[in-house]
Amino acid sequence: MPLISLHDRSALAARFLADPALHLFELGDLDDTLWPNTTWYTTGGPVALLYTGGDVPVLLAFARPAGVPALEALLAELRPFLPRRFTAMLPVGTHRALEPDYGVEHRSTLLRMMLPAEPVLPEVTGEPVPLTGEDVPDLRALLAEAYPGSWFDERLVPGGYVGLRGADGRLLATAGVHVRSAAYGVAVLGNVTTRPDARGRGLARACVTALCHRLAETTAHIGLNVRTDNAPAIHLYERLGFTSVATFEELVIAGR
Image 1 (cartoon, rainbow, N blue to C red):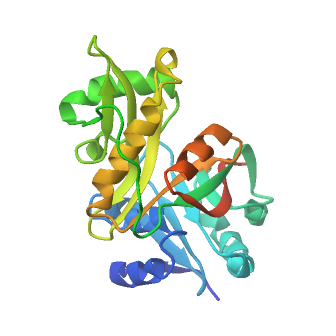
Image 2: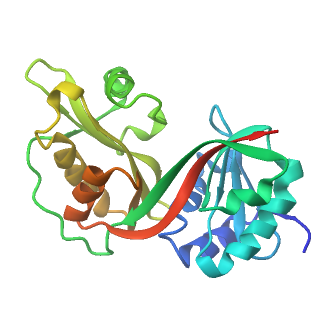
């Protein structure tokens, strides 16, 4: 089938809500604040999203194993319409459909994990508190020191971030969201980090637990991505009740 551009937000939401664990990011990008920066494509099967609201365009295209051949066909059709350089989240190996026009500059393998529909979360330890717009400078400083290169959108801080401060007032640890949509009931955790000199004290675990408690009050689908080689983080999330959903690749892709 020829390439089709999709514009019906309600139809896209219905499609993605049939498998929300796989499509958390797409559902979040349907929200009013992000929707204007999105373009959606299909050839009749899986859907690909090109998000252009950040410094670097992002291509998202997911499918269960049975849908991978159709997704590869879609990616092949998309080649003439993609930017010269972008990041992508794709099922493992499907980037080959973009060859010979594009090559991979960087690759990480990620695991998608989800909380169950009715999570049984442990009690919160420590005293994580919600962060506000006033905390953004401290949050930026923490991420620059402890998690350089992380993606951060300060619009998501109110209602989407918690943190722990030390006795000296420094922000020591935080947990936040990369995507959150109240309208579609989804949140993707991100920017979970602790200052290097405060690690090993359970601060990140306390922040994630507190944030999940807050989100679970209004959010039906809570998930996250974690590198498959980050065993301590995976263990932390498993202890909180997260389960594995799918493995995919995060890629930096550039034209040849």
